[in-house]
Structure formats: structure tokens, C-alpha cells
Image 1 (tube, rainbow, N blue to C red):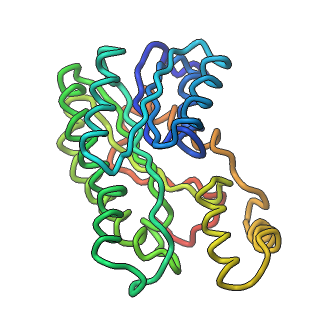
Image 2: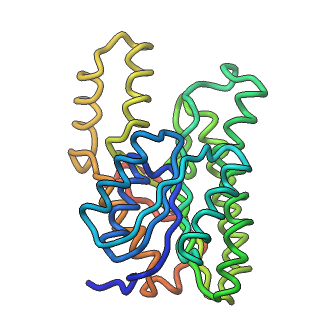
Length: 263
């Protein structure tokens, strides 16, 4: 299916690997020119080269720490300077470290707030005026199942991800008159560096091997396999298209049946 995204421009956070990389690759396959951001310069350049060699789209790689206001502004300005517009904004950042309530200091909470919630607020504040001016835009926030169903040992994510849902619902009514939609995606079991980080943490606490924990995880998945970042990227591409012009303010789960939530 042709999603009619050719020559659109997307700015994608955390795109050097994992889910962000999958989003960038699938959008580029649809003809979208992509600006990809990440703190890790090496993997960022590798991803940029891969997308350029496997698609016909233009790519710019922007080293950026998305917990910092200056870097967020730099990412937006470089994208505008290169492509003159931003049609699609994919907000995606690394998750906070695992732990329970008394494991964290004020500084831990402040850093995680900057990385998870304030990042999305700052990015929307900078990008939305361009979308309003062109009277069109798509904003897609990659969150977590913890936004719907709190997880053990992930107190930082449990609290801060929910704020993105509130922001999305609030903005959706303000933006739809300008043909701008904003939606959330809650991924399930995707084999990313983030997932392996959580498995490693569990391994240290239980004295079980990473291999044993990973096999147990997969055997308990309804889908009986990890999902791929490209599967999530396909959903992002659909939400970025005109086919999804009436979908806004929603939180969509892509988890292969893991979640027990009914909404």
C-alpha cells in the first residue's frame, strides 16, 4: 500500500538503534526524508549509512542528548535548515533505570523527568508552530506498556510515562483543527538494548543466567517470539499518513497480547 508519504520530513528521537531505528527505517522506505537523533555518535552514523544505502530517502544524523533543552533545539533547527519543514515528529527516548521507590534520589527523578516527559513537552513546543503554519502534522510518542499497566521494579517509568498520555489527550483537541494529530504507541516485547538491560538487572538480582531469563520470557509471551522494531515502524508509518487523519489522542498498544488492560 502506498501511504503517500514521499518527500515528507520526519524528526525521530533515539533513532540510532532499537525502536527509533525501526521507525526511521520504515518511514524512509515510504519515501520520508529523516532526521535521526541519538547521544551515541557511532551507532547514529551506522544507522544513517544503513538507511541511505537501503532506501532512496535523504538522512541527516544529529548527535543530541534529548534530556537537554539546548540539544532538542539544535535538533529542530538542523532539521528545518536541511529540509525546510517537519511533517512527522516521533518522540522516542531511552527508558529510565529500573528500581523501586526508595532506590532513587531527587536527582534521579529530575533526570528521568527531563528524559521522559519534559523532552516530549520541549519537542512539541518547538515543532508544533511549524506544523500549525503548514496546517498539517503528525506527532507520535513511543511510550511503554507501563503507561497503561505499572510494572514491578520500574517506578520511574510507571509514573512519568502516564504524563505523556495526559499531554497527548490535552493537545489532541487543540491541534486537530489544523490537521495535526498526536498519538501514543505502547510497545510490548521487542528485543532492544533496553529489554536486555532489564534482563541483565533481573539476572543480577536473581542469580539466574541471561539466557535462562530470556528463554523464560519468550516462552511466556502469547506470540512466542519477540516483535521486531520494523513492526512498530510500520504502525508509525500508518499513523503518519493521511489514512490516519482522524485518529488522534489515542494510545495504541502493540504487544502481541501481553497486556491485561482492557483499554
